[in-house]
Amino acid sequence: MAGRVTPRRRGSYGMDAPFAPAFLAGLVLFYLVLAIVTGRAMFWLAVLFISALEALFIHTALRGKFVVWAELLAGLKLRGDERILDLGCGRGAVLLMAAQHLTTGRAVGVDLWRKVDQSGNSAEATQRNAVAEGVADRVELHTGDLRALPFEDNDFDVVLSNFAIHNISGRAGREKAISEAVRVLRPGGRLLIVDVRATQQFQAQLARLGMHEVARRGLGWWFQPARLVTARKPQPGR
Image 1: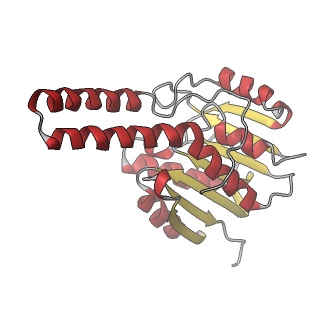
Image 2 (image 1 turned 45 degrees about the horizontal axis):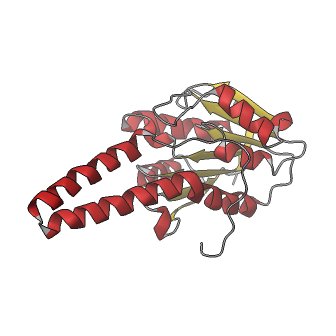
């Protein structure tokens, strides 16, 4: 990713998993006190390791995801008339980047708007960001559960998700969300999921559902432990 330019964003996108940085900062403080009191090297190493982990987390949330998704969206080579769905869109970091690739198409976001998943998460915040990015005319927001999407079968050309499906508790719930993503995807449509947990589960289920070109890969050392899962919905009879 060296040398890549971060796309300039005009909106305000908050922090994914906002309690995580505070938790890591608390751990750093805890081990720092132990290191100072005891002078033991193991505690200093813990301070360094957790500090690096927190820096990586913040970098991913504030910059890394924009760089990665700019590349992923460019790689789709969109025509501009597609219907794109972002599962768990939050304040629109990925949704609005996708909308910028559209002309007559539609970028649709669905979320439960839980602030535990993203700081300041709300449909109103996402709409404000859409206005700030100049794409409000091609963005549509829905409140809904990823396990029961409020859309018809075969409704979207592309389905995206960034750090969202792992928030669903229980393997069965995550499998239902994957099945719903496949259901609303049109034949020939593409699915891209970036997440930090359960990506092997996603990959295996997509294969069981008969999806084509199912693949899973890393996104660079600095974007660990995120993985990208991709697939294409087959055309009838193929």
